Amino acid sequence: ISSESNTISVTTLDEPEYCTSQGNSTSDERIGRVKFVNIDNPSTGTAGYEDFTYISTDVVKGQSNQITITPFWTSTVYSEGYAVFVDLNKDGDFTDDGERVFYKTPSTTTPITGSIVIPTTAITGTTRMRVMLIWNTTITNPCGNYSYGQVEDYTLNLVEPTLGTSNVAANAGVLLYP
Image 1 (cartoon, helix red, strand yellow):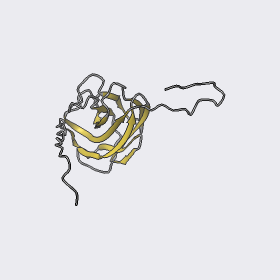
Image 2 (tube, one colour; image 1 turned 180 degrees about the vertical axis):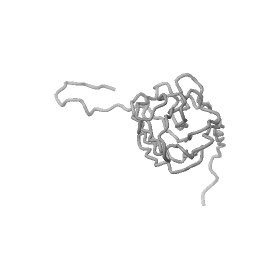
Image 3 (tube, helix red, strand yellow; image 1 turned 45 degrees about the horizontal axis):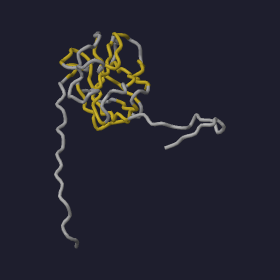
Image 4 (cartoon, one colour; image 1 turned 45 degrees about the vertical axis):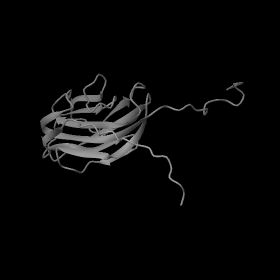
């Protein structure tokens, strides 16, 4: 038993309340799989909105990363629009400039792939990523109800890039001083 130690007070921040978004029907089409950095989620849910925020990955700011979204059609192949939104400034919405980090106009291509670069100005730490597949729509609004399709949310941990020496030759003559 020791003497009493110093006391500190801690205040936790509330999780932002994000807007709702969903497809009203997934009977014909939905998201079949999302792959991004270390996320590889076979999206087997059939609800118009799926909360996968318990699935996360680290993303280095300023680095290009490939995203792959695979649609799932129950029978007929429909033209789908895609979008990915990231809350870069952690203010609880996806509506600020640059927060739609990827989109594809309606297409029957499967899977679709693209590159996402999180700006170095984004706030470091955990934030939300929203992946959307909506029937025959070029998606500009991250919120609302859509006739057909699906919306999924994930968690990203935005991290600062690190310096490395992997490309420095042994005889480069580099000197480093404090």
